[in-house]
Length: 488
Image (cartoon, one colour):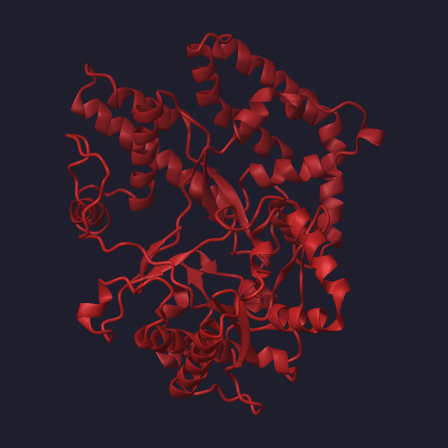
């Protein structure tokens, strides 16, 4: 997103200009992480008390004792192990040793919906207006669909070319420059299924023919299309369009002859262990399967030309209407826009404001609070990834309860809202500079060895430890910017 708004050319820096000067992700002091965790438990324990559990004071006191016991005992050893691991890690202790494996690759659920994210583009103004709101007939691929796909491919290839030349200005915030390592993992990378844990491939050499191709999926047929010439020059948009049109024509001719593709591609959407088993079986059937699979997995990226079209917004819907569903999309957008850009008197963070609104909406819908995950970027550090902003806090809970209390005055509600926003902003700042507690405590747990260290520490064995990170609400967002109509 940052790359969409670079500074003027004279002020631009090479993409990886700051990489060698970025600090390492710190290992927070153990006491600081324990205190932050204990504070985040307060609203969870309050809710447990409301539903018949022990009093918040008694429950919190027990957990404070467990934290003290951990700090003075096994926690000391685990903290030193983590510090040693950090010293032995070239970039940072989290990303070098744990993050991809624990956060992604060991997760066995299918990738679609569970892991993959999406961006929704605005309508292309170059497409005739009468076509934008229409849905193509089932199975049809329009000329404009192919044309727009060609331009999207070319823009992505242009972006890669700029990245290779280090012409993408480094991302940054007011706090400082960001790590750009993740940009090196955008193209020619594939997640391979494995038994128990997946792997990422390494990008092929630039001289490899596969490095210049994209994989195109149409009606379960898969095609390899070259979009970069041998000399490294991107194929012009018209040339990409012609090649995609040839793919579509071939698919139509196959359909006319009654040919149907083997639906091998759908296997990749299965549970990961099962996909690993089926992929291995496919690879043993013939050398051709290996070479074909390699072409797909080493391609720049994949392009699907199959229709997955949402109905136009103005089409009638069978969804029930009621007095609680009168707000239209423009009215909701206007409320968010006024909060984010049009209300200087509010003097509050748009993100924190929306986070509080989500907390209130959840409580009104569910009748209870829940642990909430929002991402804090730690890209201020070398190979920095994320930490957690624990949106559910004692302050956010107080405000939500006041909003649902008819006797609470507007002034009281406003004061509590501003307190909750201030607490959220402070947590966001701390988590972004390596002071969050979730990744730190996770690192300590991952280094715990039952065969050497004995019974699980009470602080980790506590049901409330799990409850406080049972993310029924995940409210992280990508800025849609001016190019995208939505993200998720």
